[in-house]
Length: 198
Image (cartoon, rainbow, N blue to C red; front, side):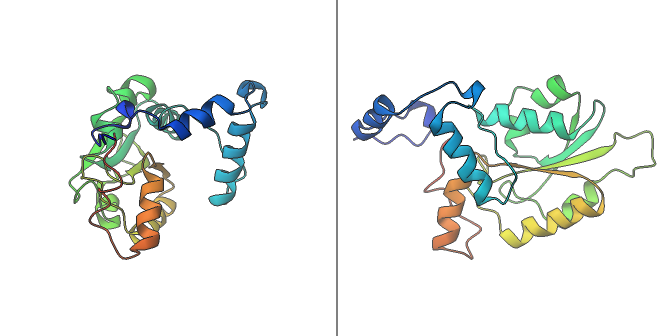
């Protein structure tokens, strides 16, 4: 078996995966009639303590929808300079939502709560865009698959609550981060062995 960690888009399914796809019960998810999608949404909502979850077919689609929901045209979001929402989504934040990105120079795609707070524009200074959203990515793609420290994520959440900002997780490799954190809870530096896909 050849393993290609450049991108999950070139990964070929195993015979077991193909069998699962071919024998899966299917339905129209628009009418909430697809049992696999329904089960996935229910499980994820329960895992994260949310009222509901919504399946999206791509991470970029999910990110762009979240940015649109959390912002208004002319607003600004804060993200690390390596963030997927800035580097790999074709200018979607500006095209789809009319927002700009304020880039933070973090470490391997991860910024601190202090850096986030310092990047917030003063709300009463009309010459700069209104900061309305903070976007993080776990694990970090351009940061080599680094996993965020959960305590730092909670500190960033507190900054967002203090300043009434939205808080979005690009969780394209979140499952990889959860596996690594379960096995190595204090690791922040290297989840890349499990998360090299784009």
